[in-house]
Length: 93
Image 1: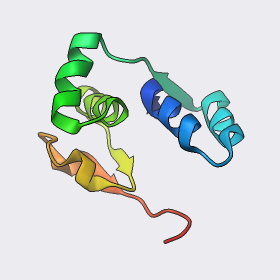
Image 2: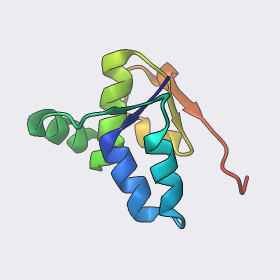
Image 3: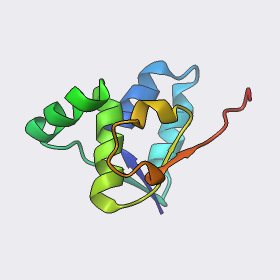
Image 4: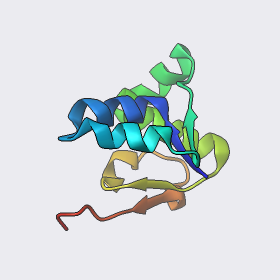
C-alpha cells in the first residue's frame, strides 16, 4: 500500500503534463489517499515547509512514521526526522 496525501494529488494534477496519469494513480487499489489535515495543522506545517502540499506530505510522514519519497529532499529540511526522506530520481535524471 502507498499513502498519497490529498493535497499532493491536487498539486500533481494541476502541474502534470498528462493529468490522466494522476487519475490512474488515485484510482489504484493499493493507493490510500490521506485526507487533508485540519486547517490549523496545515497552517502550522505550511509555515515550516512553505506550501500546503509539501506540508501535507511532511505531516503524513511524521504522523505515520513512513518514508517520504520525493525528487526534492531540500523541501523537507525542517522535518524533525530527516531519515524519513528518500530522494527518488525523475525520468529525466
